[in-house]
Each structure stands twice: as structure tokens, then as C-alpha cells.
Image (tube, rainbow, N blue to C red; front, side, top):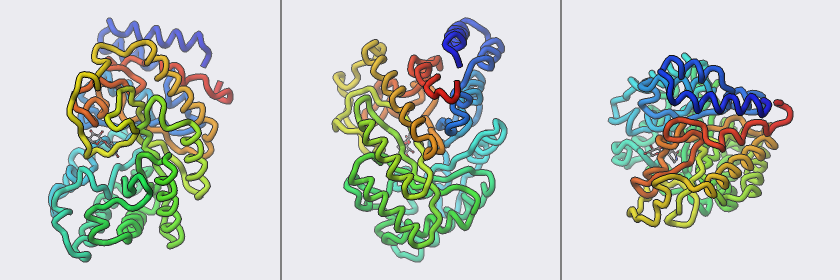
Length: 375
Ligand code: XIL
């Protein structure tokens, strides 16, 4: 896309502010899109909230179907929602999620089968290995089986590793030992042999965690268990992880002969209470004015840094496009982002490509035109 068209498109989007719904929808359809810009490179996805799946805001849905060709459910497929009691599954909204993907002809990803967080509480009551194995098998086979041949991929296991590369303590590890990983992938593969099976985690660029992930993946491969990809969540900051660490990780995971996906991309611009990047959803800190510096808007200097960060990251993704299957943003507009409430509640964060009014930010424009092959 040349710069003139890009500017025209941007002006068009800005001018939509004063239009009625019908005019806005038409305007969106004329503009260039992320999915078209990167169609030769990788899928471009977003996480969908429950309201988005229910198509509550038609303007937002027009934007989503225009920009993205892949979707991930932000919460509704987590065990506490989809399998709230041992003998009760709740497929009402998950069926709608899959129907959404089919309606808009999108790649449909499942998130997530086995995770220690947002875990249905009844799992923690299972103390013997047969009961736990049966429960896990039923959970995986019922859910994956229901959407057989509809899902492009699944996060089979989410966040099984500590930052030092050892296995995270969880009910699954406690009761079944390391075998739970093998069993989870085995059962998912049996329930739908045609879907891609992923291991997904945050801080996947940390050298020690990377080694742990390597070990975990190799062990599955040596046992002949199907694993197709690794998801690097991509909850990153303005400075860290370094581009070099991101690049080395992509190269390293791809060398295992599996696909690499960036599964939950967002760039946090706010101060971190640990001075670290990461995404352990169980950690929360007290609110403090100093920790919420941009509640009235993002200063230009930070916006510029943010834009450059997205541009640098996308340049890297394009360099390694042969290894990358999908880039998924963890939400559409800044107002949706979980980073407004994690790890400190009630902050104003700016991590995504669209602002709170769903207008494209400078970072959106900056990632167009990066690939000479596309232009
Ligand atoms: C987050 C959701 O965005 C929030 O709405 C929810 O309250 C907590 O979980 N790693 C993951 C995602 O794998 O599922 C998490 O999503 C963010 C961190």
C-alpha cells in the first residue's frame, strides 16, 4: 500500500467520528486492513471478549471482521466458564464463538484446555491420580471433540513452567506428576487429529524458561506425542524483552520443527511493580498514583516509543515469517485490554493498535509497508 492511500484511509477513519453507523461501516470497508497487509506472511488475530462474541457493538464487529482473520476467546473457554462443575459443561457462548469464526471465515483458535488459573474449583478437590486423569480426559475429549474439524489450533497446556524453567506447581502436577503434559496432548490429538496442538506461555524469551520449554517439547516429541506449535504470549514492555531475545527465541523454537505463534501480543506502557515483564494473572498489587501516570492521555514521547516498538517487532516477525504461523493481539482497542486492571486495578493503559474509541493509533500505521514483497 502506498503512503497516499494510507493517509487517505487514515483521514477516512478519523472522519468517521461524525458519521452515522451505516456510513461508518461503509467507511471501514474501504480502508486497508492488517489481515490483507500480512496475508502472505501470517494470520492476524485478536482475542474476543464475551460482548464481542455476542456482537453487541456492530461498529466494533465491522472493524474486527475487516482487520483480523483469526480469533482467540479471551476468557470463555477457560475451565471455570466452560466446565464449571464436574458434570456440567457450558457450551452456550463457546458455540457462539465458533459460529462467529465460521460466519466471518476466520481461523479459530481454542484457549485453553489445561491451565492452573481461572481453573474450575472442583479440579482442586481431586486427590487421586485415577480421578484426576479421568477428569482431565473427559474435559479435553468433550471440549475438543465438540469442535472437531472446526478449530485451527488449541492451546492444550498453558503456563506449565516457572521462570527458571522448572515445572510449575499445580493440581495437575501434584496429582499426576509430569505425565499430565503427555496425557493432555495425547487426548487432545485423539479428539481432533486435524487441529494444531500448542504449548503456550509467557516470558518465553527468558533463557532459562526457554530451556525448560525446549525440554518439555522435546520430551513430548521423543515419546511420539503430537505437538505442532509453541505460543509465545507476547505480553511485552517498551524496552523488554530485547529484540535479540525475541529473535533468538523464535529461531530456537522453530528449530524444534514446530510452528511459532505470537499468541497474546500487547505492549505495556505503564510502570511495572516488579520491574519485569510477565503475565502471572494471580499477582495483583495495590493501586498507587505514581503507577498510573497517563490517566489523562499518553505523552507524545511515549507514543513515539510505543510506535517504534511495534514497528521493530513487526520487522522482526517479517524477517522470520517462515517460522511464524499467527500473530494475535490480546484485544482490539485499549479500553478492552486486561492491562488496565492487571497487575494493578483501575489504571489507564495503551497497549494495543486501536485507541479507546477504536481509532487506529500511529503504531497501526507504522506496521504497514514494512514488507517490500507486499508492496
Ligand atoms: C486474561 C484475560 O485477558 C482477563 O480478562 C482475565 O481476567 C485474566 O486472563 N495469559 C493468558 C490469558 O493465557 O488467558 C490471560 O488473559 C492473560 C495472561
